Image: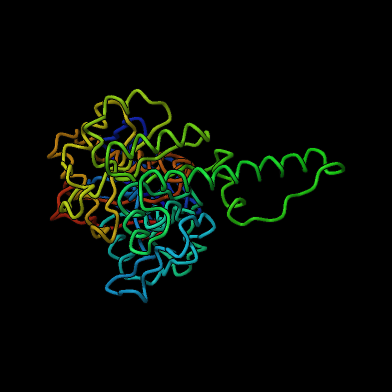
Length: 384
């Protein structure tokens, strides 16, 4: 299949093709070229001069794990019976038939990062998935992180029960304890694999086992943190254990953007942008936040935190960030390639690049205009 007569905003190193075409084979992008292709067929799509670009990526949501319009029965986001639950797998809580997946697709969101909630200091495994499908296993791109939470949410959850943690100190201590146990567990596993004759395999521990990909650097540590001091705690813990940190929400990031910009290996997911200051740790919410982070060199994406903000308002969130001072092209990057890079899925999606999945959308108009929808949206080479 070829899509021709299109302007192509590739989101790949700023490459823009004013008149070009894209070829798709087996759900993958096989060519991105200028001009008009030869040998057109009936299955090929005339873009009528529209703007072709990659599908949007929401870098932090609870899509499908907190279902639309359903209270406890459809909320599988927080296993708050234990403050440290890295063994929770988000894929086991996803309902692909939640109507919000359809609403995401209609607004051009082809991939989403879905996380467990922030009631626990450690909530579980985070995954990235496509927004089309009937079985979560088929929608899955890959696990991308482990969810940690700092600040108000764990304090409030466990204070109501008179259990640890009820302070920021205790929240950090719970995280350190769990990670320290996992480090010792991994050391014992490695010792056994290097010398099985003289070493014993440690007794299986599902919590420690679930943290091994994180300790090996295969996935990232996503820290829920709104306040500036909580962001520094996240960085402190990440350095202690050699983790790749992602600061999720980063609401007060603009207060420390210059410091964050000096840190290596730090990225941020800014949002929700369109939101009220609904709790004390969000009192510093300001639409300039994303712009300040980006200006100071922090790799930053934008999220809705769905269902806090419905997922279909991701482009509107990017537009609000533009109003707050973010460069327009940087806003588009924040919901395409930067979201993919931060999630660790940029090898398969996030730009119109040969070899990546054909996750595409076509516009006649501004993609960030709240009044505009894409003409069509494609996931894995299929119009959805």
